[in-house]
View 1 (tube, rainbow, N blue to C red):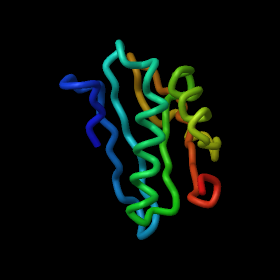
View 2: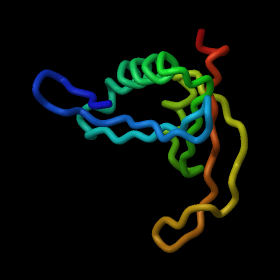
View 3: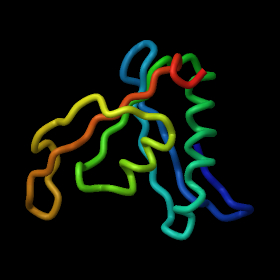
Length: 106
């Protein structure tokens, strides 16, 4: 899903199917649009649930405070921590797993 402000692309949100009724969300936004990402997030969640998904998951490094706050503001809940699961700058970092169920959103 392309996120645009007028003719300019602000970012992108995509979903990867992980099961019959579940998908994992991924996103990237240009820094100048970070203040408008909740709108795009809500639109993407609505789209995913209209496609028949019943659960959206995601993950982020444990020290990415803005991403964690964004996920929580969209209604995602922390479901677990995957210890030392991603390498950033030569260091193994934990990742937080998030989930959002259709029943929470509807």
